[in-house]
Length: 332
Length: 308
Image 1: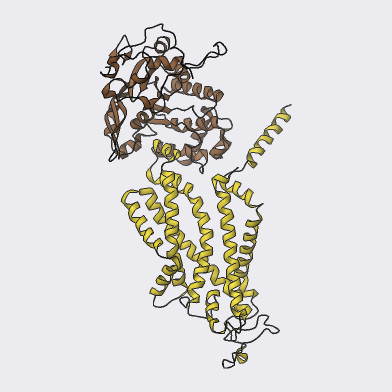
Image 2: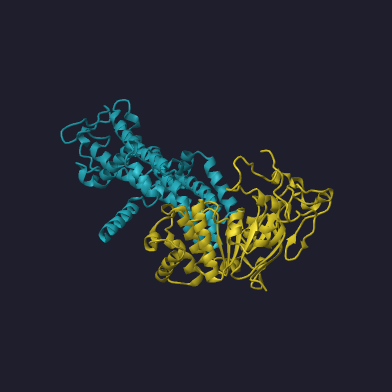
């Protein structure tokens, strides 16, 4: 049994007098200790909602969550508020996107680290301060004794994200969810943060769920990748397999839309045409069909089922034939 | 070489020390250079110094009718300025300068007292509404709406008039109650903004307990506008307290001088002796102006939109 087993997770947002909206639609995946699983997709595909649902951070009213999220054999969705609060930070850690706004601006870094240690590990303040110093040291923050007394705005972006990772890992959670942890950082710092996370996952045997829209992050970090589109997993495979042979037209489009440094000068980018606004509901076919270069008539009539193809899960009527070059150029 | 390195490190450490520690520090840096703030601060400084030192500054006992033999009611005669009494006497023949100086004490007590009580009440109500939300929020906010729908001075009069025996305390209470909804609404607004902020979500994701989230993560980040409001409220509280005393709803014991009450006492002789009204009026205006200047500049300095 895996550490985290997400089965058929569905989140429906419902407001009075409005059409219910399925943000996440039957998502399933497993995470083993020491393994990194990626959730990839563009904005609005449901990746963040998935992570918030696992952490139990969605508002009680308005969001209907079904399915199971089983952590070490317990269904997190069935736990009471209090039980869930005790687990958050201790068993489940989370790193957010924007390192500046995710830290309390009026509380020194040190207190924000010790707060978790006092809460979950019952440490007295003094002991917690020593542990906090070790934690900052471990995530590569130089001169931790000074940084402990400083406020978030005195730290650089990269250092803030390191501090947040230190806080998330303070109680050695077995599962860490990182929601686009590098989006707000510049590229050199991104690489540092990613290698830090990779190292920590290996050292501590933490299971990591990596949420990102950046395929570079996936390539560098994830073992298994789930590509989400419109709230459903459209393709799931091990990293090498996915990058070598993307089968779903969406994955294929994502990969071929990455600008390449070795491309000939003047060569046009190959975007995926259209936007999420063009989606059709999954109940009427494939949500990606209106934007899909491979679309057939059946794509707008029958919802494609999830098929297992030699260790790859694929949800497509007309997958890309292996070896197909990037989709034809679309004039920008 | 080693020495050079360590001195370089000291320099870097030194830089970090001066880099400004918090929002308050950076606000202070700007305030120090603002002439408007300094004017307000000087006025308030002098006012507080006078009111604390007035027992020693006042040349005479403000309750002693030492010039009573110069008061002739029938001929509307009031002791004029004379050696030892630079501003003359009042209707009861008491030294006017001494009364003016000692009067600042009452103004300070009422202003600060009313603001503190109003602030505490507002903090409690605002925290309840902003932190719990739901029906508590609705109930508190409707109460606040009701109180705000009445003109503040009228509400203060009604509250003060409810007490059978007016005293200094009833004035403070009346002025304070009127200020509660202002603080409550302000705090609730910024608490709501905090509730949906990233760092509160992050704290929730760490399993931080509800109480700690409210008091460590939401409240301290919501206090900025409330602190600024309290300096502005000090000015209104002083004016409203003066208005209550002017209308006779203040402390009936006129041995303890109070500027508003001094104004009210001289209504009948205002046409012949306008200076008796002018002095306390000018005092009230200057002190209220001082607090307003300070509050406004403080608000600008603490506004994150104005931060460089």
